[in-house]
Image 1 (cartoon, one colour):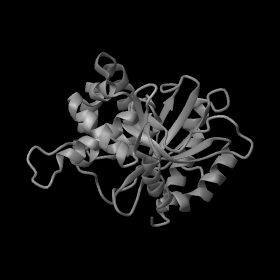
Image 2 (image 1 turned 60 degrees about the vertical axis):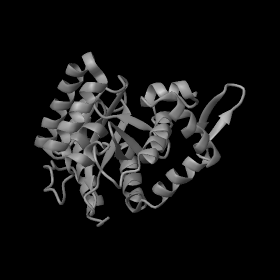
Image 3 (image 1 turned 90 degrees about the vertical axis):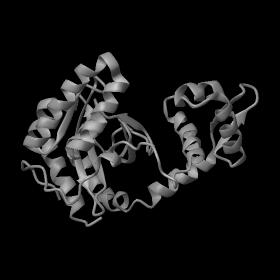
Image 4 (image 1 turned 120 degrees about the vertical axis):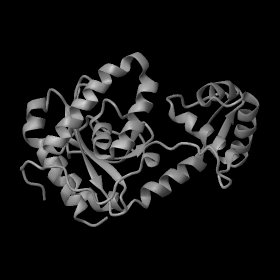
Length: 277
């Protein structure tokens, strides 16, 4: 199990390409199915915060023409991926999407093997411990373990975290190649606009801390009441996930997190990597 020693960033087994950092549509590719891409864009629109959307809402979020959106929502409803509310005349995700998400999570080997390690860490530190994966400019929880008596910070599987301000996102951004990181940073600049310089400063500071210590911190920058740390976990196939720990700031100070617990989290990540997943 993890020990309390400073951990330097590990040598990379594989590296993500710039294309993998932020999926983009190819300009010319005969194998690329544009209609399928648009349908997935419609489904992804429901991850932007609203659980129920009309065609006009979806068109605004995706940038697709409203007639195209209408055809897509009709088709996705017939296939069981959306359901239609006739009273509101709007759509919401249906069980077909849940089945796809569950299939991914349930077959994630690292999630199953890491659970006992995460449980022990949560018990010993009295912190919530999560495992997250990358999705464009966000990180998504695929597992979250809690101390036996804790009732706070129960992060649900599927919860999306912003990359710029969370320990999970910062650790992911710090661990990819320079070219991949540039694509992510350019995407965040476009997303945040005038807010980007302040967020970039915090992100770049976290990246420097990762280079020195092997972990990234977010001390009240995502939620002013939460302190968290993140460490990348590199799987055998080159996939990068991020292990996190978090607690209310009144329970775990930034000093304690940086001076002790974050180092233990880095060693836990190494333990999980050693499982050969």
